[in-house]
Length: 350
Image (cartoon, rainbow, N blue to C red; front, side, top):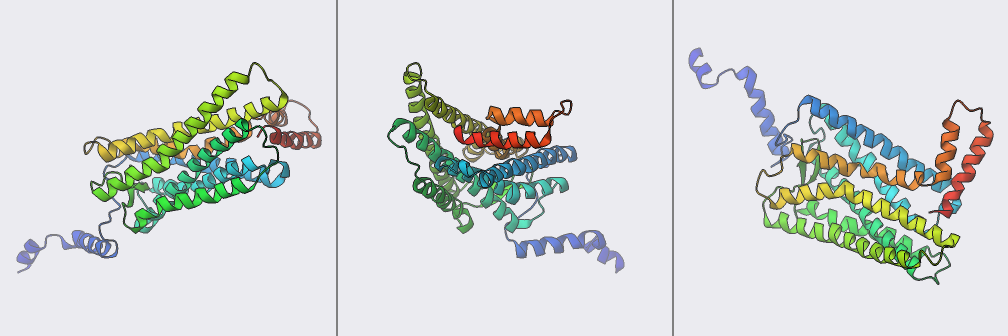
């Protein structure tokens, strides 16, 4: 009888717990699996964790520096800078609420936070990313209207503040539907981060992804291309005629914003292309592991924007180099005073 029992249920001490765990998981989280479609090696996860940890630390510190400057210097709180501040806030939230989770998961080589954590991660990253893109789009229109309509002299805070609030409402309107059943959020790549489930073959998923790309990527990019195209044409026409200090200052602002937008698109376009290929291409065209690099590149946008915003000021960069030079005998009180004076000069460029 013992032999018959072992034949019917071989090695129950090794495998019975696995079936019980799977049944418990299926009962608590139906249709959910934390196993990635394709696994990275342990070395691959370590490389991912290094990149994600660097993005998390430098993205947080860089955007924190921007917020400190806004709090420290009242002259930086101009209408156009409200939009740049909004971008820094959204980027910092990505580092705090999103990148920390994927970094911890990469250290353990698996997703650690279950279905609820995955839905939160996908929602938060999508929401904050759309806020940044919409803010950059509105910023391009603000620069276009400011430079092309020369009679606007008095600062107007109402329009930028409405644009900031509108960018958040617009983003939430497009990132809540997957939580309610129109498409969904799930694991992506090597299984240590989450996003919209690009590979689901259903009419609901495809319709949501099409709308998401049209209204949250296509239209904002078209607005930026149109506004900056018109501005660059205007700059080319008047550049050789009118070179006053005020006009050069406006050109500097234009250069800064264009650089920010170009870097943002360079970070996000590979991710968008890979997502569209995974959605509408043949099954298996984009392997989960191949999507890891565009995902990390997209997250690096949280580091780039504040670097452009701060380090494009030559006086700040020059003073910081002087303070950091240990070979020169510098009075630190004078250096700090000089640094504060030069930081105030940002208001003349931004």
